[in-house]
Amino acid sequence: MKRDLLSLQDLTGDEIIDLLELTEQLKQDNYQLNNRLKGKTIALVFQKPSNRTRVSFEVGVFQLGGNCLYLGPTEINLGVRESTADVSKTLSRYLDGIVARTHAHQDVIDLAQHSSVPIINGLSDHYHPCQALTDIFSIKEKFGKTEGLSLAYIGDGNNVCHSLLLGCAKVGIHMRIATPPKYEPQKDIVQLAQTYAKETNTEIVITQSPQDAVTKADIIYSDVWVSMGQEKESDKRLNDFDGYQINEELAELAAKDFIFMHCLPAHRGMEVTAEIIDGEHSIVFDQAENRLHTQKAILISLLGEKP
Ligand code: CP
Ligand code: NVA
Image (cartoon, rainbow, N blue to C red; front, side):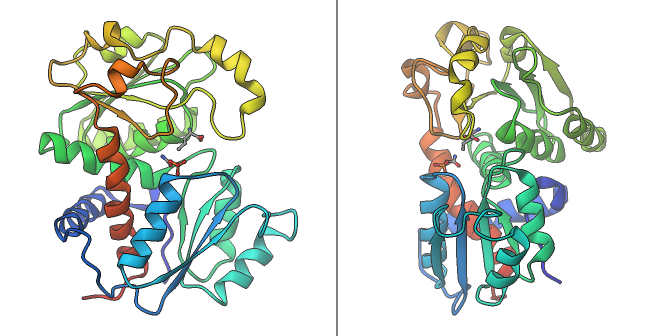
């Protein structure tokens, strides 16, 4: 039966650990080409712009011996030019897998429901599982472990935050989230993460205080204040997020050897200062690189030939 990756709900903690191990092997391979996707074609059905997700998937598929097609919003236009179900049923007849970047998360669910090939969520308004898996890999790479670390997420409690919540709870990373009022992560997703956190003995704290979240944190994480599709709310959001910037004063409260993470794209002077993102604690370009290795592991696990 085909398997999808729509959210980190779709993977057990053990499966995440296996993926991290495969990612490590692929990274040590030093970009060597292999044939695990030989003869397979993957499409990227993207309704929003992308740098990292698009390029890392295209290069990853190439390195695994497969072929990749980019289908941007003007080609597919999900649900407008034709229904998501029809798109999915049609593409399933040609392809071996689809990476989808959508606005509504329901579009990713609909694609998966009507497709006979694996669907990988490359970012929806609710989740960014490929990013969170990469982030967990990057954390393990820096600290040699995940259990017992604490991650402070400062900013909008949306897609990246939701996926980190589920992922961190599954691998034992405590998470403290600071958002302005009305930007908290969705309650149902927090509750789901709490059920995983119980099993791994981890703590999830939601606060409005960036200072409380960052104090003694091993990892400080931030994301944009205005996500793709929210551009009309820019002025209001910049106002609402005032005080949630990661800067040197805030980072002083973190553990001495903290790392700074950001999924990118970033806006210096808004959610983070240049001193922090370009400073010695920042690992943002290692994160960006690790998208490639992690996604190759995801592709092999969901649709690759066994070695
Ligand atoms: N982090 C991330 O998904 O980047 P892109 O939007 O550039 O793909
Ligand atoms: N929250 C951001 C993440 C980009 C990778 C957005 O949705 O635009």
